[in-house]
Image 1 (cartoon, each protein chain N blue to C red):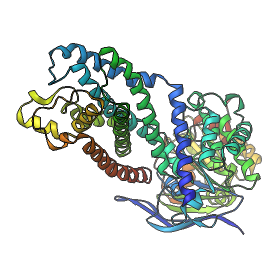
Image 2 (tube, rainbow over the protein chains, first blue to last red):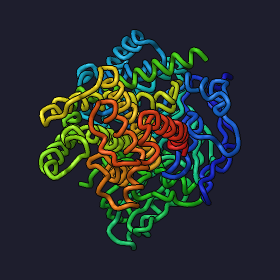
Image 3 (cartoon, rainbow over the protein chains, first blue to last red):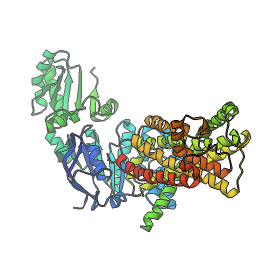
Amino acid sequence: MNIAISAEGLRKRYGDTEVLKGVGLSVEAGTVYGVLGPNGAGKTTMVRMLATLLQPDAGSAQVVGYDVVTQAHEVRRRIGLTGQYAALDGELTGRENLVLLGTLMHLGRKRARTRAEELLERFDLTDAADRPVRTYSGGMRRRLDLGASLIASPPVVFLDEPTTGLDLVSRTALWDMVREQVADGVTILLTTQYLEEADQLADRIAVIDQGTVAAEGTPDELKSMVGGERLEITVRTPEMARAALAPLSSAGSTPPVIDDTGLRVSAALETGFAGVSKAAAELQLNSVEVVDFVVRRPSLDEVFLELTGHKSRTAPVGSRPPAEAERGESELEVAPR
Amino acid sequence: MSSTYSHLLSDSAALVGRHMTHLKRTPQKIIAVTLMPIMFVVLFGYLFGSSMQVPQGNYHEYIMAGIFAQMMLSSVINTGVGVAEDLNNGLVERFRSLPMVQLSVLVGRTVSDLVLNAISCVAMIPVGFLIGWRLHANPFDVVAGFLLLMLLGYAMAWLGVLIGLALRDPQAVNSVAMVITMPLAFLSATFYPLGNLPGWLRTVAEWNPVTTVVTAMRELWGNPTGLGDDPAFPLRYPVPCALVLIGVLLAVVVPLANRAYRRATAQ
């Protein structure tokens, strides 16, 4: 196995807060490694260490065999970095941004130009190439930013929350571009707050929380730890919710639960569509009036609750994808008749 | 090492190119930096000029060196704000992740601002001639005077870089740079001869490094220096003292700015 990124015991403290408390990871070359966690979990701190921007207080890390502290320059020649905020010059055009970064990567002016053309085409930005970047949409900026990090064809690319704040179309487009890179043999380390994103892209995932790795494994391994899809119904009264517990238990082996509102009941859905059908029949038989129902994957909150035993700290705002994207992708929602 | 040196040049050149593109796209910037000095020329040259007495000379010839120096001092704001903006939009972070010579980020910035300073000074020359400024020196000294002016501007650009990196917030940079440069400009012989100042204030103004630099320019250009009898030591040898002062400032500010750059992103 060829290891592209490895880290051991990374620690970082800011004043009284220990942001990283000994994080380690190992990423095989040519794969996507997802780092999943809520805001403030230490994801960005870790990426900045691996990208030589920040020195660890303790621990060590190697990227393509070079130490990120003692051989920072060698590491920088072999990585691309796309941060949370598209780091581009708004006054320059898309093409000028790419050529500038290519020149600073010491590609030479001519190669920087050819490479910029290639990337503009590949990321579908040729038409906008001569417009100042400040006129770009959020999705276009992210695409250009990703292109910029690939300008010197680095073997390792770090993507720090590449799709935060993007709409569904832009997110899927960016995912496709990430997949293309992996197909070309690039190793990618990606941080995200979205379970769905890690699930879509990553070969392995580390769930980090409060500066430590809470769980690590393939997406399937993690999901089996948390449980699979869930069937969730909404009813009108708390009494009705309690009445729904027994019928819903036919969907899976774990007992159904009523959430904080007292009106939503969810159960693990292990038997797929047959389970939905069985549960629906049982609910009807017991005259439970269902107002709304969804089949959904475990949310990041549930992953956290399961893996860390506490709710993610930023649950209501930060840790969930925009409502639109979430509905479109990770939930199958059907309006009641 | 020689490849590091050539990369310093090529990386800086690439970044100067970036700033020149900015300047080309927003020529308003040039207007913005020349408008203020034009206002000063009109204000000081015409409104106050009639009541200002310069020993052995005329005020319209006296004032221009001051106006040029004031332009260099206020360029601190421009540089500092630009640096703070780059820090905030993540560009500096990206630069830091590249295998480029990091010093070239600052060299590229300061050299570009030097170009902007030169352009605005060239624009001010005809304005000066219009109000009656004349040069009474050989061409060599005239050029030397302008080179000294550019050197002052370059040192001010590094000061701006340092302030921008230390404060990181464009608005804070704006006000702090103002607080630093305004007293330096006004508590000196920039706009008026020091003869009429009360004793202690006169001492402060005479020892103000800006006074030394403007006096050096006046001497090189053959303009009246407005000095009374027995001026402070640096004013007796203004040109060498000005060079030493600017050299010391650069020697202090450049390493500090370089250190601030490394710290600014490594947090």
